[in-house]
Image 1 (spheres, one colour):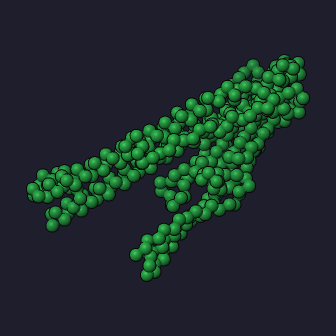
Image 2 (cartoon, rainbow over the protein chains, first blue to last red):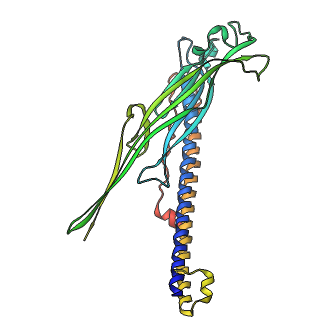
Image 3 (cartoon, rainbow over the protein chains, first blue to last red):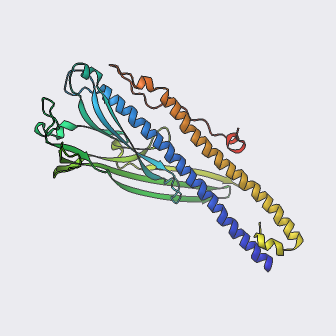
Length: 255
Length: 91
């Protein structure tokens, strides 16, 4: 009787310890994915900002160039330790870069446009700063003199709303020759990403001063759905809104 | 199946030997599993460095202004294969 109890204790100890090891492994995997994704997003944001600044021509004919504030948002599918079969977890990674690169424009003495660019997964929104700030309220007048009060456009923290549906089915068929198991997962994940903004008044004599809000609203909003691309990765795009990803596997155990 | 360490002392000689053998097997398994997890972790960290190197190698092209500028993305980099030998033997 004593031996039986001791054996039970040992089994329980191993079950707990084994679960802990698997949990630690899962957490490590999750960190690996996060570090890799973060590096990719930061790298990509800078290269895309360079490209946008170098290639943007705008309305003027003085060659290419712009001052670009580029924000890249990517929803990556990561492992979900508590989730179902291939359920995963949607994690938002963000990278940003500022590039002022206007060699042709500067050579001709022309001023470059200031752009705010938001690339959310595969969809991009480009906004010209001066479209939101009318000329009489810009920081400098036409002669380049600083105005005592001026307006600035500020973007706020991004809002992300996700609508996820996931279900998992297991089908088991037994006959005289084999047992056939079929496991299927269905994932539907729509994400709405919105970038709010507000225009506030500033004073050139006091950097800390923030006047009344002149205007506020949503600068960029996009709804995107998940899909499974040819490289075997989950991605999101506007054209896949409402899409359902169905994945599964079947295995046969013959007698 | 293993016994708790305090329990070992009170057990009969035969049972103690069996437990010792079982613990030895389990201990080897745990060490191998831990080493494999660490190898996967090292592999993952190495990919970050290699990817950064290939990214930096294109910085001159990325930073040279031209009329037909080409976006230098994604980096020309293929992740190293994570093989069984690499995970279990560290090769």
